[in-house]
Image 1: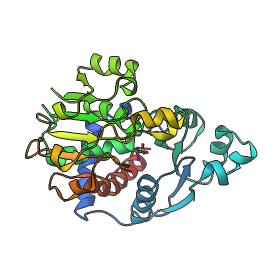
Image 2: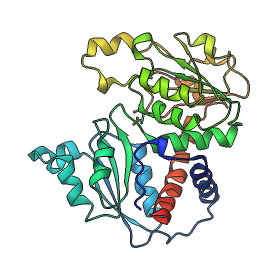
Image 3: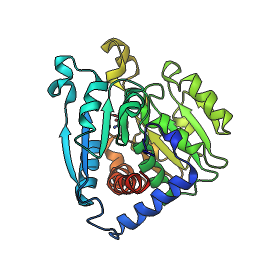
Length: 303
Ligand code: ASP
């Protein structure tokens, strides 16, 4: 059976345990450098990326595999000539053993997975999901905090922020996790997702106030307003700069809390916060490499 990673909902607690145990080994340099020798990964990116594409490519190379890539598929692939995603996948799956796909349209990786004879990994599908980011986020949380009983505040654009959507799905697997959703009313979490998560037992609370959400949180997860999803610059500007974590605000947080961000940050975390020992966002991005190495090993082991 082919293991496609289209949504974070595909992971069970056991899957996550297995992937994290591999990630820990890899992080401590205990891994077979030839594990994926002879395998080829295609990165097909229709939207910009720094961390996701480069960490996936580095992960594959470090495991002995090779990479073929179109970093700007919207401009440089046959999509410009009018080729559909389906046709592109029909071609690329004969050139590669795994396809890492980033696309501007929600559900694109699900469509690709119906066609592809090799695993599809969703590296972000529009305002949908970003399951591998959620894995590295959860790994970073579990390295530093007890996941059962965790109190997390998620701040910013929760409507379009795909990393949030996927991370919430993973969090819903654990006991007594309390989530404070901090967003302007119109950028709140989609109600269908809220319902799905509540039915799974995740405790959700909504607020528009960042300050009041800082005191009790073990994790503060900041996000960027997703400019590219707005239809007008004017609309985007209404929300830009609404939530900014400054040094002064960070003083209100728990001493042992951790600050996370999927990056890129625009202005949500003032650079002065970078020196705070609770700033974990760069470590979080670094963990992306280990977790993606573990995920690739796991996919090939399972497929
Ligand atoms: N890098 C993340 C993503 O691709 C977060 C962001 O772009 O704001 O979704």
